[in-house]
Image (tube, rainbow, N blue to C red; front, side, top):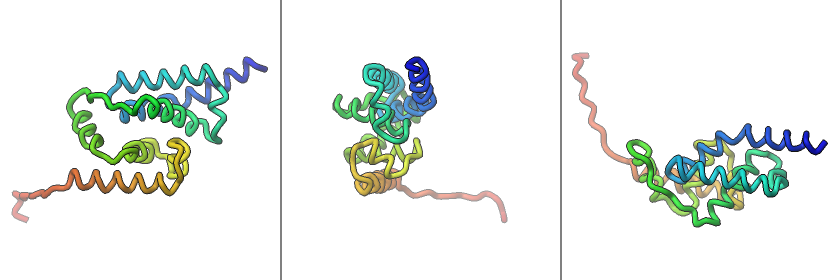
Length: 154
């Protein structure tokens, strides 16, 4: 029976691991640091498998473990590799503290405000407020004028 529990545990984690890696890379700024945090999450789960049962949804639990590890390490953001990733990171870098995480959890991972709250260890109202702050700040940072020149006679 114990072996079956280990298989079930592994399957629940494996199903959500690609999403955790995507979020980790987006949040930390690059693939190397993002994957290092994903490995730290896996090591934490091996050391204490019961952590995965602290939330009703295994994906929320997995992300909560990540958030706990990342936050306790000072929430570092590495240099983005280059190109579009670098431009995106520069926009995200100026966001209000914790709003970046809340924004990425909702827009990239599709979590609702209650799930974001569970991942981040805050209230649902605070999670919703952080997302709104991030959206306003992102909107303000990319606002500009556009001139469209049409060369068709019609």
